[in-house]
Image (cartoon, rainbow, N blue to C red):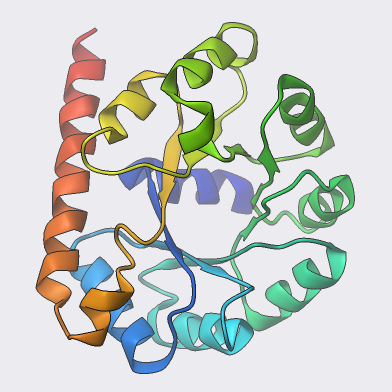
Length: 219
């Protein structure tokens, strides 16, 4: 059930906001801004300072309104610590079947990182909820399209280099969703209190998604 709910959360906006290196008041500001923008899916990377405490804080304050997960989960130990902190889903940069098995055994949505068709299929067979294609910016949209030929049955999440100019292209290429980091979780904007620019970017991204959804439905 958690896996189904996890994909449903992401399907609403098709965007996962990846938060790296943002803590404390600035993290709280970002969460409030994303809520205002109706972009409730947030991934806190474990290589951020105080990542576990941040996940716990976000769950306590926003857990009923946001979908908070842990990213940069490298191994089983990371996964255990993230789940104990309250992460609702796990994202890895790599293909580690032990981490996938752990998450699957606990019915926790898991989005492992992969690049090649072999890795993607390994992740899926191991129990991945969806597979993160990383690094998408280096691979390119044409590669994402080509993957859909034999692997369209596997939900894929593009991470790396996605912005308002190309988000519709990634979705049109067959991506189930995208993960976006510093483009939304803008450290400089947060340092100066410029949440308006973050809100504007988030709303523009979601507008692009809605435009893609409308075009996709007509096809």
